[in-house]
Length: 118
Length: 117
Image (cartoon, rainbow over all chains, first blue to last red; front, side, top):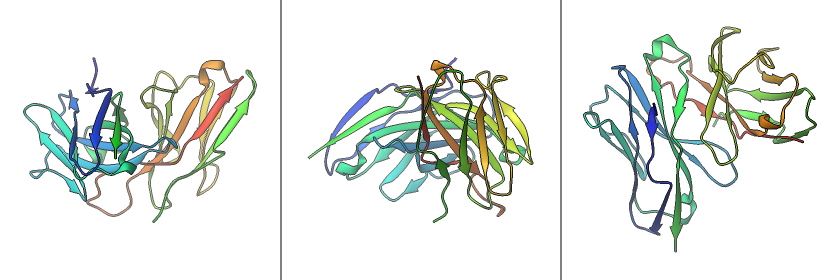
């Protein structure tokens, strides 16, 4: 069964507009972490934002925010004021279990390709 | 800002040859990982490493793969006898500084693109 589902293979947005990239997850563990990474065409994986399962507030990092709806098991990434440099592949990932146990692998979704047009 | 580095950026090898992919994790991190991404597909976990031993490995990480931390800074992935299907981008990642309260974010290196001919 898919643990992380990203249903949008591609998204288009105009520069300066906001865009939401969807991510749903599946876990029975009460303690988990959700991450978003950006992969530009050059190939590197750039960490964007993190949301812990016990966090009361939605995470924000500059133009990135995470719309965390725990009951729906969704963790959508919102990019405000899109820029041309935001064109990239975006991956949602989940780490299950307590961080104190250490060495938890990340499980990734299939990604969403975002294209920002002028 | 500290970052994970990987060498080489691109490795081309013949089927059956051994390759070693090298990584230098962020210096005060404790946990190290290898992931791979076959072209156009999602990122897949290979192995995690802590305290000089493997802590978890995936089904992909079979006997042809091995990892090592030969000194205090490097972390290597060896593929003993490469196959065509090993062609992929290989990412090293590290996590968990010594300070408490961290999110356990895994920071990725830029990747090594392995091409097996």
